[in-house]
Length: 292
Ligand SMILES: Nc1nc2c(ncn2[C@@H]2O[C@H](COP(=O)(O)OP(=O)(O)OP(=O)(O)O)[C@@H](O)[C@H]2O)c(=O)[nH]1
Ligand SMILES: [Mg+2]
Image (cartoon, rainbow, N blue to C red; front, side, top):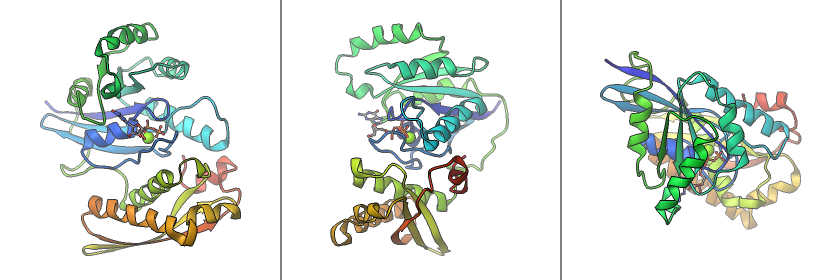
């Protein structure tokens, strides 16, 4: 008997959904940072087991505070991912349950298994506090399983895989035995660059920035990539460049090292800044940039 199906990873921003996806797959597929809504696109991470293939779907953090076009698109993607999956894993921060968590928990589909992953237990010093916390979330809705875990250390992550696997439908594997994701190298390159941009710029980063791959050349042992960091005002260009261009250089170096590891090839990466005013001002324009 073999099981195969999709598992949605949903929750509010910053609780560690992407870190969890990467830990599950054992590769850095999905970008992570301290900023809310780092993830903007759904991405599949494939987990192979002798008796199951699990297709985990990372999703943007669902937030209730900001209401621009980008946030609307991201919230929609987040809920759509939950509706498309066989099993849903709601991720929360084990240290605090918020009203946003409650809203998401209650909006999740009622006709399929919903599991709760209480993440970041490595930051919970007094583990005795977990029990009352579990009691509280049980009152919000019914969960098929509650697993306290740490995506960072890997603690109890295997247990979550077991709990998900046994709830998947009986079906043959959908992906090849060596497949890790549904996304192209081109997509992974754009995302890795965006991660470095997010991490380097912190609060200075204009929320509406993205990365466009202008050229992606696949040679035997080499990827030649030209990419633009797209911002929406001329005044943001120097922020991304940094003094004497040192900041964009650092972004390029860090992205190149990650991509060389991910692709297992050498990477030649050239980055520049492009100003496109209003690119994120409407849902229609966002769609032309690959936002669902
Ligand atoms: N200590 C600790 N930190 C974690 C853990 N999991 C994630 N983090 C950190 O939490 C921050 C957010 O992690 P992400 O994986 O980007 O969170 P996310 O839920 O995908 O966030 P969005 O994509 O913005 O919705 C990062 O700084 C992670 O390093 C964990 O188990 N323990
Ligand atoms: Mg994420």
